[in-house]
Image (cartoon, rainbow, N blue to C red):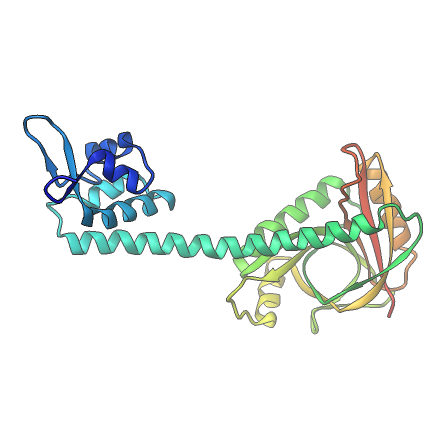
Length: 285
């Protein structure tokens, strides 16, 4: 330290960055040194510039372009106004990242739980029981005759629609054979069974959506919002080296059930890349 100032190397070392980065920040105007020796050209920084460097590094980490940081660091612009505007932008980005991280945590938790369940039963060649808590689903009715393209397009549309309804799409999807009651937003037993592509969802953290309002919005977009009640399901795994074979065999078994039933895409650590796995879920109520 010289005359209360830090050399560029000392200053860089305090935050674990390299000198080249500091020179670049200076070059574009994002962070100028406190003093430049006119004879040697050596750069020196004040200890209180560490907070400025911290802000610059945080904003860079959040994805704010350096040119924007430099523009707000322009000495011709009042420091308080420019800094506050940039910091508010950074806060908004950080909040957005936190919200997205919370959603990703929900998605990965669902994937982990399903993978654990499937791994526990993947070697079983007979039916088994599985308890499910209440599940929320976005559903879209499929035509009486459909193929894998129709199914894939429908589930993709459900995945893309969920965020606009403040819902987080999970990785669980498949087919529900049943009939939705739009009064209760549940699947009712009955003879008028239809095929629905479904995507399991959860409400976005921090939201307080009214389920009825979500359901109404869904109906207007040819998408239904439905609850699957907590229940014990009789389950069976369908495995094949052909997607269509597994899918169609699963649907055939569901059609034999008088109750709303589910064919869910499944995963297993013991599944080889050329195999496809589905789980049949028939409620025991």
